[in-house]
Length: 310
Image 1 (cartoon, one colour):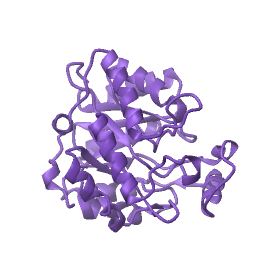
Image 2 (cartoon, rainbow, N blue to C red):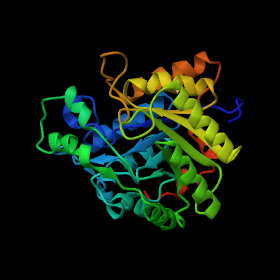
Image 3 (tube, rainbow, N blue to C red):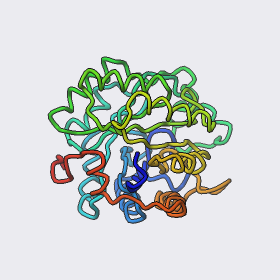
Image 4 (spheres, rainbow, N blue to C red):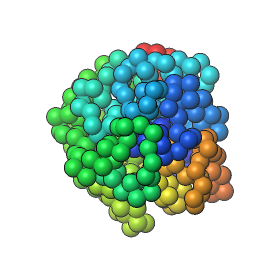
């Protein structure tokens, strides 16, 4: 990525990793998700990455009607790029996971590049009290859970969204996922520039050592050359340190309560905007500036906010 380009901040607002009992600040209801996304955009996020939750118990849901309870509100208040999940939760099948993106036709959607073990069970070492019946089994059973993303699944998602002109935040949790992205680029199902989101520190994926970061960058450079836009996602306490390392190497960056509940050692983040503000401070300290949503659209080759289905 050219150092003359502004930095794209993606903010992942809620997600399917954390459960409601882990933080009182995790957005659950449609109004909370909308408020969090708008706040993140006001703080400088170029893109907001969105999941939906059942407002009664906070369980992840891919019901498009639930997304429509907050998407129009965000769109009316901000020109931020809206990025919807095709990951949903590891407990869901690909048909269910795809519905919001297929029906609502966002500019951008997440897309995982491989099946993997997706272990959340270690969170039980920190969190022991839960408000809802689904939360503990959701974490406990993750030691025997595979997050399925087969070649056929990925092909199905790409073909289903081709007419929508939705582009993808390509989530790579390991080195092999980069090779899978290269495979789909060669087949013509992915188009350059690829928006590669390198994910570090989740159990089942690549680690969070600086050497892991460097290895991911070297491999992506070799596979894609100038045909990709790089971004860093550090899970949990690694969010800001790894993001900072990536920024120093020319990456873009993702923060948000989906990926980390924290805003410092032992301190829960009260808002997604707080994490955006923290990483924006790093970006500006490095002598760079944050991309506007329209600049992010230009860098990633997006279709525009007036071409979506909501």
